[in-house]
Image (cartoon, rainbow, N blue to C red; front, side, top):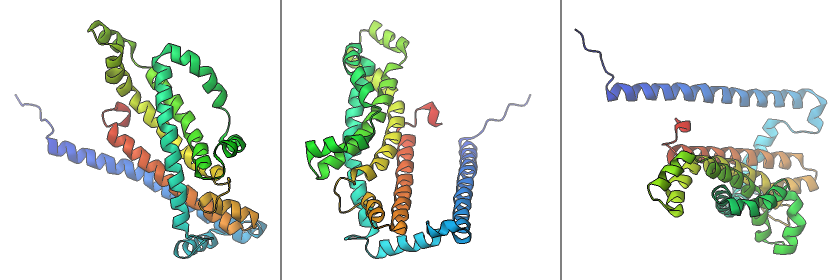
Length: 277
């Protein structure tokens, strides 16, 4: 009687590597093709129609990006403008994410806290960051604090909502079992509720990072002399469409990189979560 063959760890590792490469190619190749098709369409439309009188072609924007990197746009080069914007985004994101995790977990874990905070959160949540510009100027003036405040608002809502959902949807049977074994509320929170909420929190952090990066344009409208948002606003004031599109492209590229970094962090830190498998 023949014994069934079992796959060796080496063969399993090779199979997983091949599968991962195939999945990567299935994602990367269509992405590259879609971007290339968009650039070709943009080039044809701007070169072959009257739309070219209003929007520069992609090669012109690319040249402007290169000149901005090796030269200056205003007082700084393009990379320095991106660094200023990124610093503001990271500072606002850190503040908004920390507050969002605390408030969201508090609402999901404590019914009394949720009853007190939930109505206010539901009122504040639909208000866009741009509506807070006058209040941010009154509260914080025209310095960096006002910009960080606006960016933090953009991050806070998304993180709070996901942390709240994560803590609220914890398996009640696990909580009941822990209570039967004599665990107090503090132990249940840190050993069951918080770990179970991490995947939802990371999902909120990804959305919050994108929201914070999108809010940087609004934040840099508050008297700024550097940053990618400043480039767009200044280009609008000077009717410089090339500078506007250069800033937009730079914001898109940096936002794309940030989103992928957040996704990679979730894959590494939440490796145990089945949804990442």
